[in-house]
Length: 75
Length: 132
Image 1 (cartoon, rainbow over the protein chains, first blue to last red):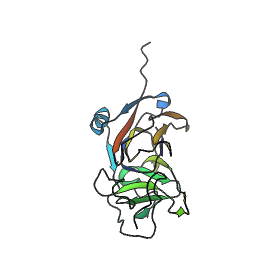
Image 2 (spheres, one colour):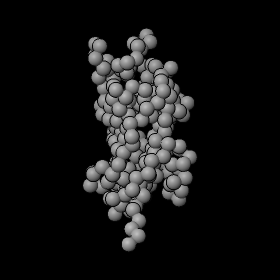
Image 3 (cartoon, rainbow over the protein chains, first blue to last red):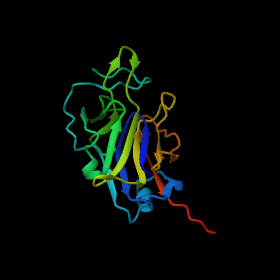
């Protein structure tokens, strides 16, 4: 897969496994709901992870919109 | 809360993460009872950064593209945790994966969690084996 497009408000901790033959344009896609099973399926591939925890989030220069169904954000 | 460059993780993780309206990280985006990080510190959201009157505004899409060195590559799998995906009627949480030609290879079902819950979904691309 060349690209993944997410539709969501929030996500954390992404995983990436490098390498797939360029000819794999008709790949079969398997779905996993457990990180352990996902990683096991990728055994032998280098897996990279991003968890966003290295970002200094101390700035309070803006606030994110609450979901429409959620009560107003705390002051 | 902080924005970060789309290329922040290109070198370390081989990913360019491009949020609709920008890329943002926060402990909980001021809703700590709803947005509980899996990794116990930050969560991610696409931008932008405003709440206009009573109307929610903001990006809901994120593109992740994969790189090694100076060139783009194909990834064998991709997965992430979705957080607080308890209102699919407001906007479904899902992701789709694409090949070199930018044709969709497949995608996740709509992901739902309980309030403040989280769920991991990962997709692995396996080259089809032809028996004959």
